[in-house]
Image (cartoon, rainbow, N blue to C red; front, side, top):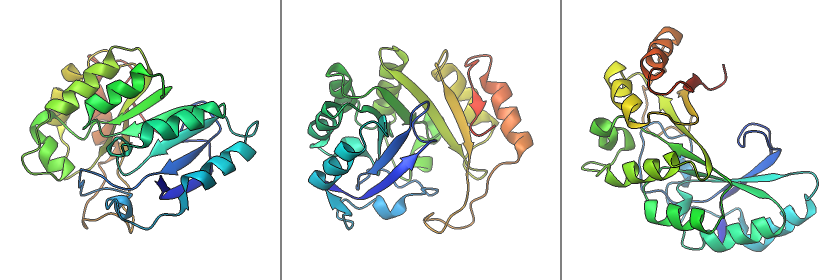
Length: 229
């Protein structure tokens, strides 16, 4: 399995863990605000082979205690379960980042106990999902199924939304609140422009707007908070 990036140390990506972050190429969404757009193509240049990653991890036992697997969209990779098994066999816990588009594969991973923590991106309200994910005609049904699976609470999880002024408004969160009611953790994170963002001209919301969105969410999701605050 080809590995498309490795951040050797992170104190932020995996809550409560000293971890590294593994990047896998290929994604089925084309979010206009994506920070990892260089990883959208599954054929993008690989940084290392799986064996090199596992060798790195074997030398970091006792120094790291978690591995965050992100993308792209990791669940598109059929080899993912095998990789996660090998990572866990080395004694690491696994955090999986996903857009929720493959609930069948997510369920299979969770049933096998291959992910200890799942972070699922919630792009927007179901009505604006296709626009925000950059996929015209996108069916939000699989997204709803993945969210419902996590809401069952059998695996530790969080939901998170990157908030962009041109894509999110109060109606977005009036719809998201009842949808994700009772979620264990739900974070809003403010969009930050970078060179890798594929669409120019996008802007963050103001702190006052973000606080209004949280006020809309909290009657349904008391845990809702602003990441980094």
